[in-house]
Image (cartoon, rainbow, N blue to C red; front, side):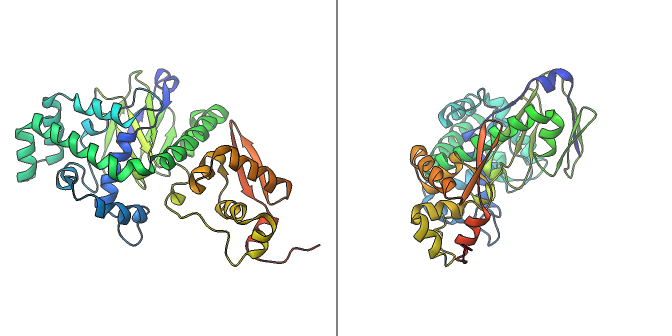
Length: 329
């Protein structure tokens, strides 16, 4: 069990951020772990990108980013702003002192006799340069092409979390963040197989939604890093689904509202924001808004506001039409 004591200063300095570098690093773990297995959450993505990575030093990246356990802290710097670019994050990684690289790799080795890690530890400056190059190549091929969809999902999650914090305080925020997370009497707990107690001293807490962190909750508390908890955003299970065509044998819906709007209704297995829908269906926001207005007027979808976010859901009428059922007159 990991326990983190949050004093009033820490609670007042809770902030959220999105990190393309965190997504890139954790996606390596997904690629080399269970993502390509038949039941893996990210298997569709993994099978698509794996053949494209022949010019990337995956042996190096997978040695530093194992399928489970510790990830060297220098690979996951805390974003200084709510949203930053991959290049900015990679520049922070590149600026890591070689002594820090060596120390983090010693923690990764953890007493094991690993010839590759021993070689990397012996030349930390060269290791860092090779890692930065490999991460850059990997990002361009494996993550950047999907970044707009990933970013939209992350932004939608941030809006929801901030609304949770505003409406119910830290108790409501932490209650809905992850099943392994608990909060009581000023202490945040994370269910892990090892024990660690961290008394924070006013640095605050950084919360980073990360698609490729699924299903884990990643925690970074070692000084001098800002204490960070990385969790899976809402809707991650829909990330790699192909847009549904509204089929389900459901010609009545397509006949009523057209194929594009039928596909939109088919996406609403869970309530979604316009940002999420736009990325799933590759539509512009104005076009999507026009479709949603027509669908709402027809009684096929309904909307509700949650703080600053408007969520759209399929109505019972939309469900019956999508299933191809008859509609009573």
